[in-house]
Image (cartoon, rainbow over all chains, first blue to last red):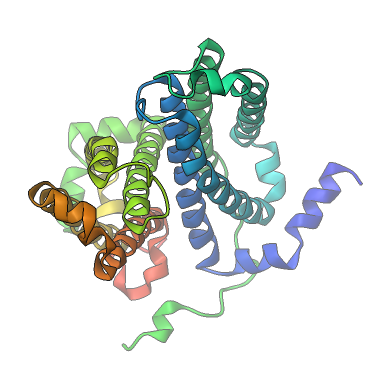
Length: 182
Length: 172
């Protein structure tokens, strides 16, 4: 299957249609996406700042990491699900958008960065767990991580300014206005 | 309010923001970075109160770690938020989401400030007994919900039509 056919299939799916046709789904999904991504960024920043020795320096690194990273993954899951739901409403437009592609590239770089951490400083964590900062490799990775995630936030916001939202195929059926007393 | 918004949109700072396409997305992105810091700081303090995280740290250590980041990032939010209002006064000031959000920001900030003062005044009691009280734990959850609603309402400013007749925004 070609990529164009796949994008068209996603756009034509019932879920995508339901989100497009509703006044409320897209804004709500986007709001949850913001909650997820801000929690991902905030919790990762806690770990990165600890690696750099700029915050929580008196706590063992492993303590800080195990305390927050489970929430990072939970928030990341929310961000992925809501991100996919927004993507399918207008898949071909997002797919060809420069900022969307930049954001995906930065996400991949963040993943690679995390993998490099597991190959370097993570292996010697016992030696520096109680030190205020990680060895050079860990500090470099932490700096890159902060830059990548801030870049992801910027790229994500730019997607919204460089794509037009899909318009509903039909008029929405329910208006909040109709449900409220006049 | 419509008249004030229209006057504001003619000020030179507003015109500058409007005529440079990159300014609004940049301010919004910085705003989101700061939201990340605020929301996570509130979350970490609440986790500690609930006993779901940071248990190797005292309540005082936890608020000392996250309190300054919380207030610093709130300052950034206020500054970038003000610039957004100046840059797009009609979009912001006539939005129902905006005013509901401002109300909750006031409430969330008041709770955070009251908590910090109460903790400083009665430190030992907070660490040993108060932190275990059910109403304190409920307040921690409520605080987190308030800040999440603030984030949702912030995004809904762009979609104020969801409020139907409650929105003063000009119909698109």
